[in-house]
Image 1 (cartoon, rainbow, N blue to C red):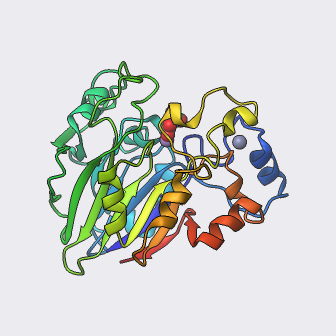
Image 2 (cartoon, helix red, strand yellow; image 1 turned 180 degrees about the horizontal axis):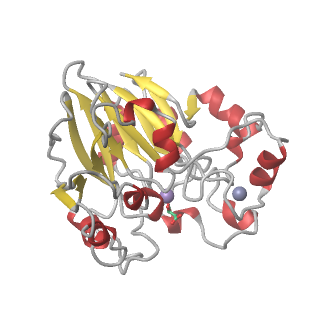
Length: 305
Ligand code: MLT
Ligand code: MN
Ligand code: ZN
């Protein structure tokens, strides 16, 4: 299987349009060793022709232009994207759907019933697509029963319910339901290798740890280094945990969990917020990750499993 990182940033991307934080201001001035990042999305394929898009970011147009296999090749209107899987209904993971409205047939979209409910009520992008070719919704179960996606030959998927938060606009924001957030195991049925992808993760429950332990590649929530990172920058008094993101550096944080895993595997942070010091490749925080063998995803990163 091939995995391509289209966007490794969190909501807002890096630099964010209105942000003058330590990182955003330095990257604009060319005073920081690091690279800009578009918003959260990956794509996966076993045959190199049919690609499943994981989340549709507002930056999808530029992301398609950055990766030729997603571009039209066989007809006057065409795409390499065979289906879209949504991990949640967050703005950074769904807004790209409206950019993709000119598709020539209904989009095959895989998501839970809870996400489908948001996408037809509080953030009704599925309804809006109804004025174009529409949505062919496929319900993703939260019982961890593996499923396949038509045309995505050689791949098997398992949705893993995660503790995180429903989106800010949801009536379930602080009464988050099972199914509002999922991670996904993607298995290559030929090689037997698997990816575990969880861009929004608030707590690592025992079943989630099991998926991490068994994965050959882990792409996991890298939003913040510290839980109070946004308030330190004077941006917001919200803690990352309240937004459904577990930090990297605290005791029991993502670094601790990743370093406790024994299987030889690649451990990669993704969905990195623009405030996170690990974006600075010369920072002490980044050096700690390097020492721990934890990688930081970047736009254009390509993995073969
Ligand atoms: C999140 O990951 O918590 C959201 O994408 C935040 C947002 O709405 O930008
Ligand atoms: Mn996000
Ligand atoms: Zn910033």
